[in-house]
Amino acid sequence: MPELVEVERYRVLAAQVAGWRVAAVEAPDPLVAPDGARLGAALTGRTAVGARRRGKLLLLDTSGQTLGIRFGMTGTLLLDGRSAVDGLLHAPAPRDDRWVRFRMRLVRGGRARVLALSDPRRLGRVVLDPDEAALGPDAAAVRPAELAAALGRRRPGDLAGPALKARLLDQHRLAGVGNLIADEVLWRAGLDPARPASGLSPAEVRRLHRHLRATIVDLSRWGGSHTGELMAERRPGGRCPRDGSALRRGTVAGRTTWWCPAHQR
Image (cartoon, rainbow, N blue to C red):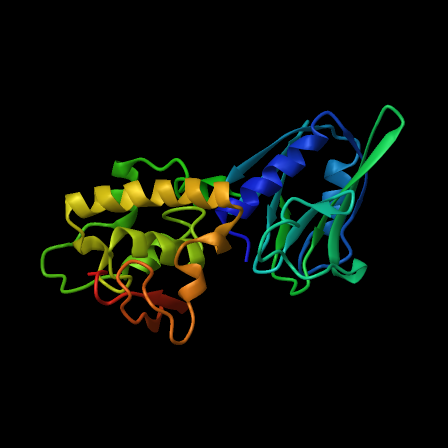
């Protein structure tokens, strides 16, 4: 599943079409591109200006409109049939032309390029001018105070609140963290994913912030969200790479979660 690390690679790929003019748009799947006709009318003739990323949302700015792409669980960005994640340990399965849900042909100086979204499970979305303000701060650049605000404050009389992992996965509060990054960060930070997010001490918030930033740097350098130290042990019988304790499996925020009960508290 594409998380912040993968979408950043897609951003670098999409940036290659800056300065190219959109010659044609194909959006044959109404589920992935709900307003395909409007997409074509709005983008055709525009010039791509640059690519940005906010969390797991890819933004391609043109001379007049912004194209937003969300990749869901199986979406892959292709440029001239190639993906920026083909070399990853857990790259998507071999692609099929039937999986292409959106295609944009761009031209410059007699040359042509094709930017496309391949998505077998049709969970991605392609939209015009997405609401960027609905997303929280980007996890790769979030400041400690912003992270503390995203976790929330405990009100007097509250016995509990949303789980820590649930807050990290809430894209409206913190953009970019997915299931694998969340488990890796919490394992590194020694924090129980199920404990109330608002119950962290200031020192724990600082520790979480430090490990969040370091984890994103490491996973980007290693090649993807699937390359964390915990990844190989996220399985029945898996043991903590730090202390050798048996990992525990559960569900937090509706997502399969692995953690070490010995050191994550």
